[in-house]
Amino acid sequence: MAEALAAFLFCALMSGSAIFGVKLRDRLSEEHLSERTMEAIRLVTSLLVTFAALVLSLQLSSVKGAFDQAYRDRNADAAQLAQLDECLRSYGAGVESIRLDLRGYTAGVIASTWPREPKPAGVSYPDTSAMAREGADPSLGALIARVGRAINGLVPADTFQANVAGECRSVYQQVQQRRWAVIEDVRGPASPLFTSILTFWLMLVFLSFGLQIPRRRLAAIVLAIGIVSISTVMFVITDLESHYVGLFGISSASMRDALASMAR
Figure 1 (cartoon, rainbow, N blue to C red):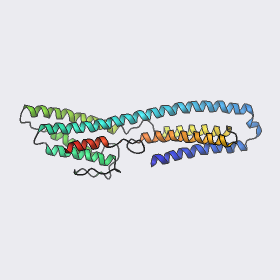
Figure 2 (spheres, rainbow, N blue to C red):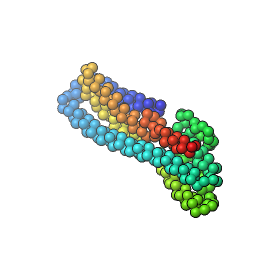
Figure 3 (cartoon, helix red, strand yellow):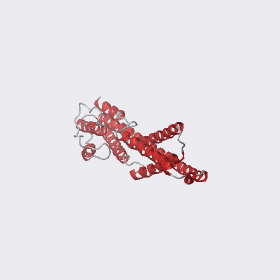
């Protein structure tokens, strides 16, 4: 919803800039609209368009790269949680409470990250109503830390269990590393200030377009297409910056698959 409002705002700002340019042209005297003056405006506009297009493409590439990294980290996190549960299952008896905590942690991550989706059933987990969608949560952090302490406290009965316990400790360390990678993914490559400056540049571009276009219906249609196209690009950038919401949000499928494998 926020991404759609942002796209509408971009469209409104650029449309307003273009309309302001058209109205400003009507108020200018003929000496300001001479061919030499319009040629100078076109040169400056070409510079602005080239610069804005370069920055826009780099910004889109950067945001897409950050989104892809967040997607890979989330899938790897889910895979390692399932791997840790499989390791604990191989250990044998005495780890049922650890596996329950691991399932509760996984279910809590699903419920807090995708609050609009159905909640995991058949497992208890901390209350997620006040949890942030992204970032570190103290209660979930405490739960996964308890899993680690329990794994470190395992007392193997034979060589096989000792080897499996060592493997589980190694996998747990990987789970923690991947968890912090997912948490750090919330730090997007673009700041709101940079997006505001880029929007200002684009407004100047469409202001100059409004000064130049003739009073023709086709010219107005082409200008409107340009506004919609750029607004769509800004929408995609804004949407990709929000990793777990919007049109391109990361799916919960991998985490749900991991939770399902723990219940088998």
